[in-house]
Length: 143
Image 1 (tube, rainbow, N blue to C red):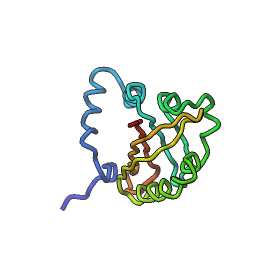
Image 2 (image 1 turned 90 degrees about the horizontal axis):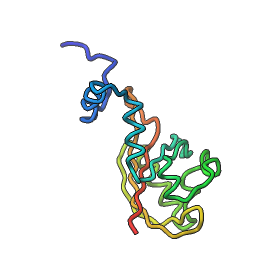
Image 3 (image 1 turned 90 degrees about the vertical axis):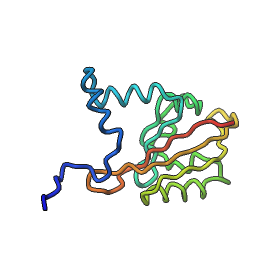
Image 4 (image 1 turned 30 degrees about the vertical axis):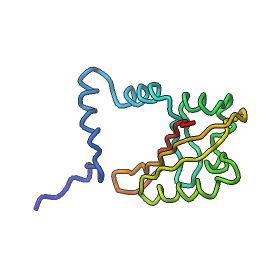
């Protein structure tokens, strides 16, 4: 039996093969990531394993009407939600941290107080060694 290479990801995404196409046209993974973020109107966030908001896309900042990212970056993500949603949002984050993709809907006003209803998807980001290293959170306004 041949030994598995330690360089192979534990969970290889079908999209990983698409990177060869990206490279063939002269782009790299960073170029692709930036193009995907700029294309999406969704609020794309990266949450650390303790729940801290580490990154929010520019379009996400706009959707949430956040003029100064430093007001939200570094905060526990669920503390940015209304009091009546915090426990549910934190529980969903913990489920994602456990390795499951989670989807939920909840209301959360923008930073300027405008009401919004969101569909939220939480996907664990898994390192090559199989450990969850962060959570990708994508929110889309649905009403």
